[in-house]
Amino acid sequence: MKTRRILMSLSGVLICAVSVAGFKLAAFGVDPFQSLMSGLDALIPIPFGTLYVIVNLTLLLFSLIADRHNIGIATFLNMFLLGYIIQFTLALLQTIFPAPTMLTRWVSLIVSIVCLCFASSLYMTADLGVSTYDAVAVVLSRKWKLGKFQYVRICCDLVCVVGGILLFLLAGGAPADIPAFVGIGTIITAFFMGPLIAFFNRTVAEPMLRR
Image 1 (cartoon, rainbow, N blue to C red):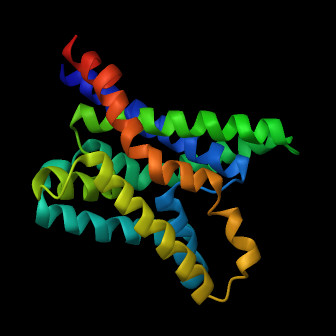
Image 2: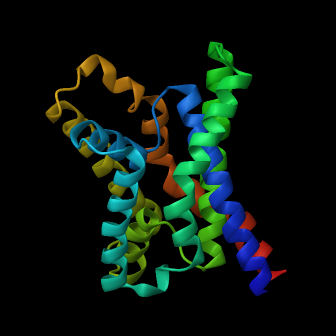
């Protein structure tokens, strides 16, 4: 059982990273948390990798105070490996699809959304820690009982999207450049990622863990 949980956590993190790279290839907007990171990246003049670690360490502190149960192997895999895997995968995808067609971009977006939700379901159900961002919705819904996970997740995602846009504009970014990181893909994940994760929890991840 322990081995299965570890494999689910590792697979979840790897699939998540590949999914984010797919979002970037599609260029229809990234997931809500990456939208926030894009805004912060435009505002704060430090390397993105370093910024990513700092933000995640801040969220990690929240989890350590609110509910340490959410911190585990997957948390640190996500924190320190995700950015590098995204970078490698995106470079590979751009080599394969140097000038992606509109069809390729739409397929990349749809596949990435489904895979991202599936990946999140895997490592959340494995219960060996979740990403520092996922932990926020878990704490608010399951620890503080503020609502069902899928609805709390939607609220968290919306806060990230709005925050990312405001930070980008505050940094002097042009409104015309906003669709590069906040677009149809962002809207879809903001409203449907929570329910899709709950669906995969119920139909795939939880049955897999019980086998």
